[in-house]
Amino acid sequence: MHNLSRFFKIVRNFLFSSMNREFLIFLFFLGLSGTFWLLMALNETYDKDIPVSIKLVNVPRNVVITQNMNDTIDVTMRDKGFTLLTYSYAGKIQPVTIDFERYANKERGFGRVPLSDLQRMIYSRLYSSSKISAIKSDSVTFYFNYGQSKRIPIRALGQLQTGRSYYISRIAFQPNYATIYASRQILDSIRWVTTEKLNLRHIEDTVSLLVSLRSIPGAKITPKTVRMTIYPDILTEESVEVPIEAVNMPEGKILRTFPSKVKVTFTVGGSRFRNIRPEQFVVVADYDDITNHPSDRCPIKLSQFPNEIRRPKLEMTQVDYLIEQR
Image 1 (spheres, rainbow, N blue to C red):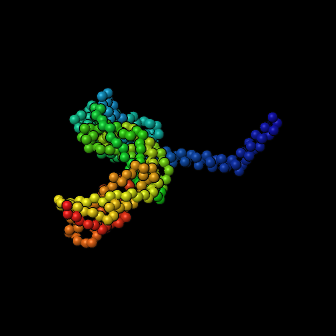
Image 2: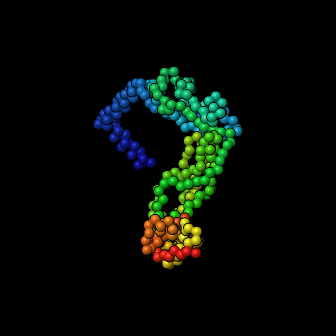
Image 3: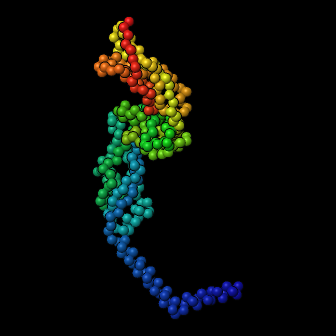
């Protein structure tokens, strides 16, 4: 107790010594002048952007809002600093309510609030001294329908690059489809919905991630996010032997080639090669090519191959041939 009294005595003597007394007086007048300066500054007129909340009301139960309005709009107001400070930090501006029934165009499925109406509604919530200099919006627009919807597939959008010797064998989404709510005109024009733009590189293992679906003006998309799984596969070089078929042969003539089969090399995913069969390939020798460009050897070409393979190539592009008369 004695030590505490001694401590307070030391502090009192320090604060009220002649030097510190002058410092305290200086701080007092400094604070007083600062207060006067602040009061004078707040009494000046300024322009300031103030966010104003907006809300759609009286929406019928059978209506689906497919694209809502922004929650807030920025309004540039001119008034004394005191008033602007009240708007900014005291929450004095009540939200502007937009009556659905008044502004909805039920035939076209959208509603628009003109700038003049918006300004009038905001003025009704301001002090009489406040003036609106600008509204950062030409109009407030919302879209709706009466439950019309459509299930459409999802596609990936962006750059999806695999590592060397790999390719993307499959992309799966969970769920596989998205439901779109919009006007009939918009629904008829939509064939699929895409993800937001992606940029994935050096994919060599299975990748699974949550992705957002890209918004469509005037439409509501459900769900907003899906799980996308990317399945890469390693590329291998394989080959099959395919018989050479003659095409455009005149009646009574037979084309024989030597050899009768040719090897086709290609690259394919390791997991898909087991599904590749020689009969999925077609190699042809065209009689018209022989007659139009006479030669000792017959040109051949690959006219059909499976979609799963890449870079198909014939082992040879010309073969010996013989045309027989029946």
